[in-house]
Length: 146
Image (cartoon, rainbow, N blue to C red; front, top):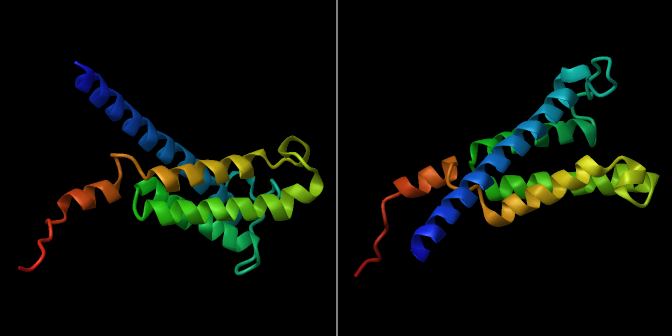
């Protein structure tokens, strides 16, 4: 009985982790579309985009789109989530923190939350509903010679 409850809890936890990964990375991708393509009003709420190659905004948009897309799919999830986490920590400390000590003072709550959530995903992995998981299941077991 205890094993069935544990297995059920493990399945629910894995599904919840996968769901959080998908939702958070989708929202992250939306930020990338805002930065690079002027979606949702752009970086100035009037459709402006980051100039191609500009540091750090354009590169942040690329990380949002590519890193967020990889995390969304669950492909190379741990390194992609770690990159996304680091990008958001960089954004928090270089853009937001100089405006005030606490996230509520410097409008840095989204950057701080994304950083910590992506760090959690990098630590826990993608969950069961991810391409990383599917590809790992399909790999034939390798046997050592001899």
